[in-house]
Amino acid sequence: MTRRIVVTGLGAISGPGTTVAGFWSSLSAGRSAIGPLGDHAKGTKITVGAVVPNFSPEPFFSSEQLTLLDRFSQFAVIAAREALADAGLTVGDDAVTRAAAIIGTGCGGKQTDEETYARLYKEHKDRAHPLTIPKGMPSAAASMVSMHLGISGPVFSVTSACASGAHAAALGRMMIQSGQVDVALVGGADAPFTYGLLKAWEALRVVSNDTCRPFCKDRTGMVLGEGSGMLVLESEEHAIRRGARIYAELAGCGMTSDAGHITRPSVDGIASAMRGALENAGLAPDAVDYVNAHGTATLANDPAETAALHRVFGGHAKVLSVSSTKSMHGHALGASSALELVATVLSVYTNLVPPTANFTEPDESCDLDYVPNQARERQVDVAISNSFAFGGLNVVLAIKSFSRA
Amino acid sequence: MKRNAEAIIEVIAREAKCSTDQITLNTGLEDLGIDSLKAIVILSELEDLLGIEIPNEILGNIGNTVGDIVAKVDELRSNSG
Image (cartoon, rainbow over all chains, first blue to last red; front, side, top):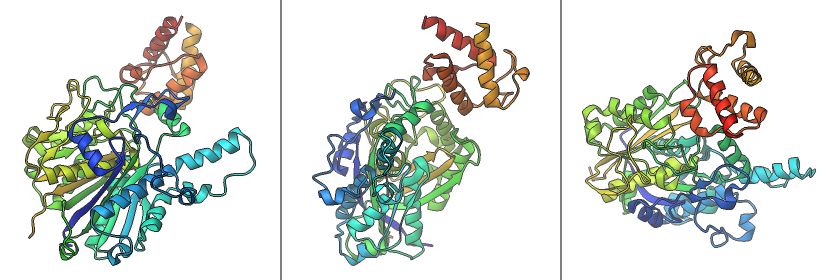
């Protein structure tokens, strides 16, 4: 288990941009993509979100291809293509054919399912669309990524709500470490701006109609986003052998479950996931420079996450830069942890910490350096990315700047 | 206002899986096992039953007793005229 796993390719489509370059330039500028939802939220009380700007699938797919692609699968394939190209890999390469693809999703093909349900329940039609199952199933995005990129190794979906993309990355890393594959495409995708799903979020009363203000006194909840984040992981020797550009090392992961409440986070559970990631990476807490926080801006998350950071990092907690990029790309559910991992990798690669946007003044129970509103240049040798899903499913991934052994 | 309280107690009893006799205005929400999630379900039922809109902000400040919820709802109903 000593194989080092490195990140060699990145892909992202989300509110802040349709490419990694657009995503990172928005995040670096502290520009939030959260805005009025308009028709996307018609008939609901939800008013703001982070929608992929001016998105139309036609430039990316033929009309034939689109008959099988739910919006979440479209995002997955677009980000996967970008990550693969960014890694200098081409469809048909032996490394791609034998690769794994593990795609997280919180919701699956909601748009497809809801269109069919509307047809049946509302219009009282007798027949569902014949492609409802293959297009709407939660694993559709993984299958589509496999088919579009010719990935023929182990391919499947994982689902753990807001931690799905992070669980996918943890699994891909383990699969490479075990020697099962040399390359794994990992990430997450979700497209939650559908009527039924928005009504369900509205009823849960955790969504803000202001904006996402993580760790702030006047925060009023989370804001939904959509999109996909993808990363190409490979073993260090494989990456070096083919002369790939290495962004960083995926040095460790910690996974725990609260075994407690379905929505309320547990300080113990999330602290032990952070400790687990550091131990797994062989890193001392004071080696960490940056924490990409789960930072949902809900009443429950932000104080619990802050308390857990104090518990794990002790006095070093005050030295950490902690930011929630959800303030800019929104909470893209299963895609969120993957987008945040992309941001964390780029933070280590560029020595720039993206800010917590929309920051006003800190909550009294939130007393760390949340990098308010403006990105910060600083040495980032080690960063962790926190993801704590509903249901108490916690994943923390440790990213380390890469230097050859 | 009394009818209001009775209706609210009925909703709370249903969610707490107990009899209305076991609930008074002084009963603690925690004693009934009402956590944040159950509170959300109760508020949603009250919105339907009483035809009012209960803002999300109330969740952070819902109080500790059944009487606190009744008072909040009374306040909302008098404000909405």
